[in-house]
Length: 117
Length: 110
Image (cartoon, rainbow over all chains, first blue to last red; front, side, top):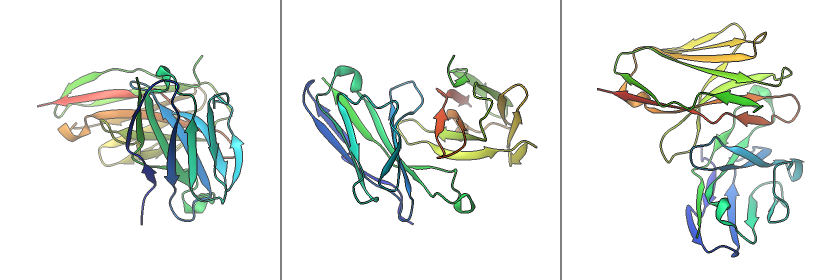
């Protein structure tokens, strides 16, 4: 079974530039997450989708971050304009809804490493 | 107070040692509990779920104390390959929101 796919794997941009990350979840997984992981910290949830609807974006800095999952499958996370403190790994994850299918287990992609200089 | 708190370590232990990690959580309504493992520069992966009755998977034992809002992970007979960061994860009800601790780093040396 294919895992969660993310691209690009690495990105270096200057502050105030924009960047976009793409994620394709595991087939059939209704829930999609974007996490931000700063070096030395645990992953922090930015946004959670259930199909194409947002169920939690309380920690998303909405003045500069946006995310969409238009058709309920793949998703894009955008940062514009980037700040130095946005340097982190952006992890996409997915999970099935049904508990009998492991609905509480989430599967992470390899992450997109962002460096803002 | 953080929702999920862990000692960041690092824990330096020799091969064969037994090591225990602790985690506390603040939301008494939390329903599900997990330990994830994260290798250096890799994504987190599920190590094991934590059940109220306690559970064991080979050298790994996880326990939950709901009254104290405390979770533990015990690793027996440590291997070099156990070197990683161990993340405590807690979820509430509803749409499976998972909250991660900062992780505890383990270094197993020969």
